[in-house]
Image (cartoon, rainbow, N blue to C red; front, side, top):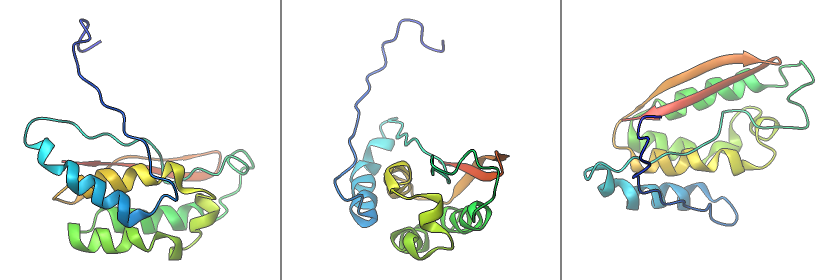
Length: 136
């Protein structure tokens, strides 16, 4: 709707096998210079993505993981990377993300950012606390 003539170049980037957070942060860092040229780096996903449990109405640690992820994403760049690399040690990490396919895009975007994030979205849906972030 913003660009009805659809003259926006788009390049899709696949996640790397194994979802290694350090590797995805490095991919983001490699993309960071493109931001100076006006390139927008977008990663999709949420702080919770356990489809087996999303509709059960329980919290199952979603709020604790979301709180941890907020602290990690909102941290300054060097500390943010360190925390994201160790995401599996966060409270209820594997409850929130049995597979990190919907978390790894955050690593790429965080790697491309030089400043702290802002939480753009925060809600509780079906008993699960969810957040999404924006890095300027």
